[in-house]
Each structure stands twice: as C-alpha cells, then as structure tokens.
Amino acid sequence: MAEKFDVVNVGMINFDINVKTFDPNGLVNKVTDVDEISLALGGDAQNCAFTLSRLGMRTALVGAVGRDKAGEICVRAEREAGIDTSMICYKDVQTGTAIQLFQTSEAAVLNCSGANASFCLEDIPREFFGSAKIVSLNSFFGCGKIGAEFLRLAQNSGMLTLADTTSLVPGNSLRDIADALPYLDYFVPSYAEASALAGREDPREIAQFFLSMGVKNVAIKLGAQGCLIHSPLEEKIIRGYPVSPVVDTTGCGDNFVAAFLASLVKGYTLEECAKFANAAGAINATRMGSNGAVQSFEQLIQFRKDRE
Image (cartoon, rainbow, N blue to C red; front, side):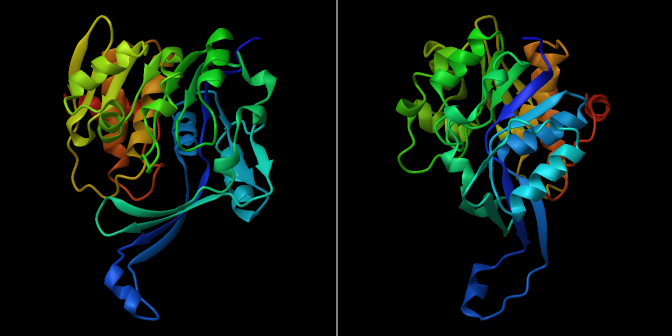
C-alpha cells in the first residue's frame, strides 16, 4: 500500500478541563474560587497528532471517542487542524475526560478513561497497516489492549514503530509489554516510567536493559535535563533547554515525541532528533495547555539556534 501519511498516532483522545490554581483545602467550602478554568484537548495521541500537523507532517489519528459532545468537539478540531480522522472509532461510552488540577506547573489529574479503555486491535481497520512511514503507539498503558500483535503487524507492513508509555498505575508492569518490545524500532518513555518498568535507577542501565529486551533504539526523557539516547552504535545524554518561567509541564512528553517523529521523517540522526525533541518539550512548558505552544519546525530550528 502506498504511504498516505508520514506518521499515524495511536492512543488516547481526551477532552480536558484545566483548573488553575487549585487548593485542596478549599473543598471544605461549598464554593471555591480559582484563578482559571479552561477547556482543552488532550490525551497523548491527540496531543502528538496536533503538534505533528503543525510541524508539517501528514498526520492521522487512530483511537476511540464516545458518541457525545466531547467526542464531537475533539474530532472537529482534529479535522480543522488537517489531521486525518477516518480511522477513529466511536463507542457507546463517554469520550475520555481529564480534569487537571494545578497547584504548581505539574497538575494532579482526575481521569475517566471512557472510550480509550475499550480501544482494541479489532478497532483498527486493515487499511491502517502500511499507510504511513511511522506508527506511533503513544501509550502502552492508556489505550486499551494494543500491544505486541499490533506492532508486529505494523512492522510487517513496512512501517517503523515507536512507542511511549503513560503514568503507571498499580498493576502495570514490564510483563504487560515485554512481548511487544522486540517489535519496537524506537522506545521513548519518561525516566520515571522506564525506571519502574526496568527496576533500575541509572538511565544508562535502564536503556541497556530495554535494548537487551529487543528494542532497537531508546530515548529516555529526563525532563528539564534533556534525554538519554542509546542505540547499538551510540549512547549519549542530550542536554535540555532551560526555559523560564515554566508554566505547565502537561504534554511536554507528547510534544517531545512529536518533534522526535517529525525529525525522523525528515531524515535526521538520532542525536539531532533528540535535540529537536528536547526543544519541543521546553517550548511546550512555557504556556498553559498540553499542546499549541509548538507551531512549526522552523520555530524549533530557531529555538535551537538561539540556545546553542
């Protein structure tokens, strides 16, 4: 099948409600005033798809929404952004919804997985496979039962494969994804998630562990410190880009992944991909919301030029 897309994102599609600034002590009152309540679109796959589209990539989104107003708003916004939504499926449950309570730049989240939890391999149409250069499974743990068989089919159809994780909840462990790791060309977890899965603390040992499990290339997100890249040919920490003030770190990892993917499509080396990814994560932290701060690939280039 001819490639229609540069990247297809698979994973969570959320409708977000952001509350800033939230004091839990206020719950003793019937009414608590806060600084701001805003509506936004989130979920790892949706965040990544929006940013990829702004970076000039031919992008499609695959996931599940409910037959409700929130799902309608999400899909309409995706289409307006130039994202292909033809492979999104509709469920008779609510669209995934997250209420993000900000006390600092890191939110506490009340999450209802909704349609995301019921998403499964059978929801993905056959025309998906081979339709893009790269498939990004934006969360092993956040989008139903999508794993080894999905990645095997994607690789066999000629697509490069990349996967991220999401915050682990009790019960999630390495055994849930071990059989999927040999089908990954790129694994890009955050440090906290990677450490919990690998049972190790040193980033280099964590990366080596995942290579031993069959992953071809690893990039571990280290927050403001940047990331560690590790492949059979190289291992290096790529420093991050400090920004001030840090407004909201929600979605920084998703924007990291989007820039990493766009750089891969453009043919950059692993190290250069990591530098563009670090830039995107830093830019995203400078404004409220999980996506929208990164506007173009030219912006990433200029951001790096100003700081290197």
